[in-house]
Amino acid sequence: MPLVDAPSLSYGRLVANVLAGAAGRAAAIATALVLSTVLVRTLGLAAYGTWSFFFVLIGYQGQFDLGLSVAVERAVARAAVAGDRARIDILLNTGVALTLGVAVVLQLVALLPIPDDWLARIGDPAAVRRCVLVLPFCLACSNVTAVAGAGLSGLQRTTTLSAQRSVIGAVTALVVIALAVGGGRLDHLLVAYALGLLSTAGASWRAARRAVGPIAMAPWRANASAVRELAVVGGTLQVTHLAAQAGDQCLRLILGSTAGSAAIGIYDLASRAAIVPRSLMAPLLVSLVPFAAAREDRGGQAALSDTLQRSTRYAILAIVVGTTIGLFVAGPFMALWLGVEGRSTMDAQRILELMLVALAVQSVTSPMVALARAAGRPGAEAFATAVAQPLALVAAAQAVTLVPAVGAYALVTTLASLILWWWLKRALGLSGMPARDLVALALVTAGTTFGAAAARLSADAVAAGPWLTLVMVPAGATLAAAAVAIVSGAIPADERRRLAQIGRGR
Image 1 (cartoon, rainbow, N blue to C red):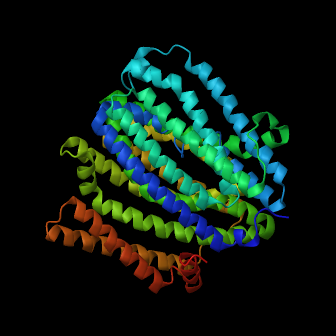
Image 2: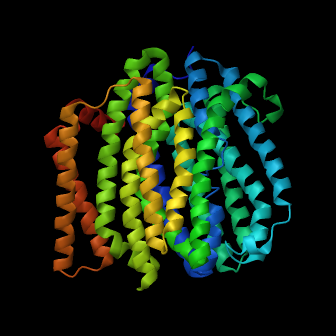
Image 3: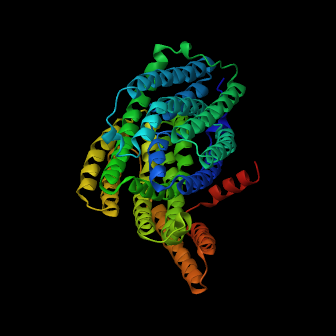
């Protein structure tokens, strides 16, 4: 019998998983904001820039995960629908085995001598060298956590996964903050964070065991067929992740080489703020891969087209609200976050605004990319990323100052995402959104902008401080978006009933 029941393949379950994931993301964002704020004020902007260079590689959304997060989600979802308990055991242990094998290779590479002048581009050479030495261990912890979490996600247990990550993530952040305040070294902070991730892996593994039966942590039980299944999708996605991450890291190197490590810190802070709207929407994409993979087995291309239309509509609704709010509060937010006025704050605000727009456009194309992953066709995504990143870096290198460099990079990568969306739509033969939905979404966008603008004007008129502005603008934009979405039909009546049922715990 299937290990996921029929309700687990309904849109109600998808919405429940998405809402749970969004709540978890919101908690993670709040934790990350507190962590980064304390670290930038405790370590200083330059040292924080060094920390951020390594930190982006680990964490729950670490980029060097061999593509296993998506590959394991997809494979576990298919095995669950088929009722193959033994296959789930093998898949999870194969993912762990691949992670540990890569960590050993990376540790050998980390022991190689690296010239100090290379390391100086990131920060103090001695501190950077120590971080390089512990990075393979941190990546291993991060990726074992990704495998365990992907197993839960593939079993449609996103609610459990989000709760685990929220609680353990908050505790881990407090430990890192305590170490930083106590004068801890950067490599010690990275290891502490990685150990917190590893504890999440244990909790996720136990939850998966409760769902499907005995699953022992035994990487030696990996087999060739599972390696092939994960490698086809996961290996291709890792190329995508590596290309994207290499591009982002190279951009940081360009910024650090021309303006010092403090420029890396400014970019990191602004990009972290800009990623918030997309992060809140990301649970839709995370849940979409295993959900669509399971539904494709039962409904074929028609099911994928229907899933694309629904998911794109909700992706646009989410990203429009988040991006609009961000654009209208960028100034007060960065001034409040950095706690100082000056050139650094202005640069951070401009980068935040650029990144908000670029990531919004890229987010609209993300459901198509998620469906291509679910269908086992991630090749076009990898090719587009591998081509776009070098072009974006060349464009950034031509700029002479911080903000234009980031703007050039964002423009090229955004154009690449639009081209990829067009190509995948043709390749998968999927139907686009109906014209009535597009009109409704345009009305929501206009209404949200009006609500945010009115709230910001009201805040300025009463000389509200940054904190009050950060309350008034989101409230005005969200209320306007909800009202227009209901009136225009952007959220149909049947789906409003489903959301109400979920809200009542049904």
